[in-house]
Structure formats: C-alpha cells, structure tokens
Length: 182
Image (cartoon, rainbow, N blue to C red; front, top):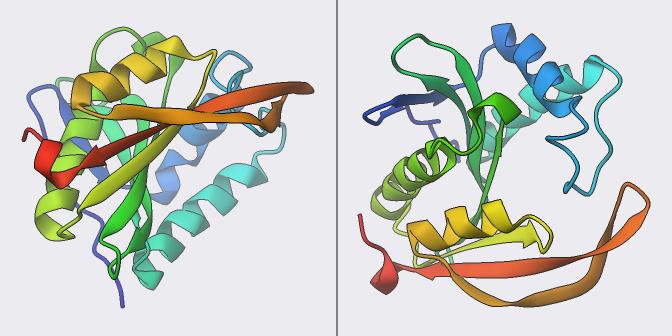
C-alpha cells in the first residue's frame, strides 16, 4: 500500500515531497557536526548518503510506512530542513515523529510549526491514536519543541545509544489523539 507524501502549508512554511534537487541541501544539513551532535550517527562525509536518504524517502511512501517531507520557508523557498512520520502501524494506529533543521533556522519556531502541520495531517489522514518521539537528553531544545506541540515525556532510555563515541540517554515522548490540540 502506498502513502502519498503530503504537501502542506503553514503561515511561514511549505512541507513537500523531496526531489533529487534536495540532495545538496541534505548533504549540507547532515554533514554539519553541530546539527548532528545529538544523533546516533556521525555527520555525513560522503555525498552518496544524500542519494540514499532520498531513496529511503521514496521507499517510505511506496511501502506505505510513513512520510518524510522537506521544509521550505514560504517567503523565499529557502530549505529549512525536514520532518517525518515513520513506522506507521495502521493496526495499532501509531507512528514516530522526527525532524532535523538547519542550524541557521534554530530558535525561530520552525520545528514546532512543521511538526504541528505534519501531525495534523497524520491524525486526520492516518487516524493515529499515538505518536512517539525520542530526543537525546542533552538536547533540551528538541524536548521543548515536543512539549510545545503537546507531547508528554514518558520516560528515559538509559544509555540507549552512542553519540560521537559518548554513551547517551534518550527521552521518550508520547502524544495521544485525545491530547492533540489541532
């Protein structure tokens, strides 16, 4: 079953399917040590990673397991980053939220705005009951984004990953349909 990747608009952003033209933006984003400092994978050093990322975006849609969208600023089309809903489980009506934004876009509310738009689509289109997200415990800004959208911090996964050679904990957040405020 395929799942059409949505095109969504907010006051300041446009969320859209990725195209091959996004490869350079993705490589720049994911090769930044500051952007990737809380991820459980090293910054990209090989541009081919961007091509594989784009292939995976298409695979998510083709397999019907989720949607990953590029985020552009509506005013000028500048690439902001991406947001995703993955691991869609229709039987349990659940999925996982993720996002990654260019460092120049941090602190402007774009992550909150994009995630909110994607969640509105997901709750309406996929009839979700629960969305889960994880954030490195050292990434307080990401935790704040999730809480602004309505996620509740449910627990901590102790030493669940290694980030740049350092053992790290992750917070687990959950958002239930009955708590969702569109």
